[in-house]
Image (cartoon, rainbow, N blue to C red; front, side, top):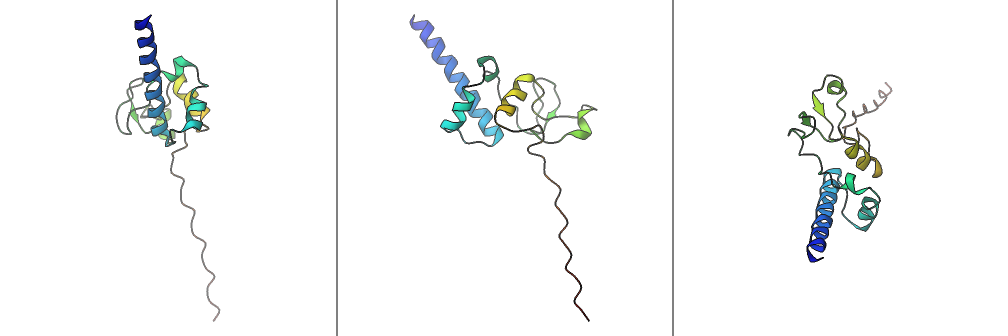
Length: 119
């Protein structure tokens, strides 16, 4: 019984650490609201580690990771991974309202030109 509790406690610690890692990767605070949503996700999904740092290779697809950044150039040719190449990762990101392109820099809008001063 004590070994069982210890294993359960270790498992819960692993799940919490994974949650904290995902929160950090998604840029979210690890507060009660985060863990309330985190706890709604099934345990097999929550047990997945967050994606590696940008520029490092993904453990699943072996491509370089650029987390939640548009990789439309590389998506079809396989150049980059957006960090959500598994169904578990897509589920986690979706629960928190992010998309595969959430961290893509938006092109800056051109500043409006001021009208020429009257002569």
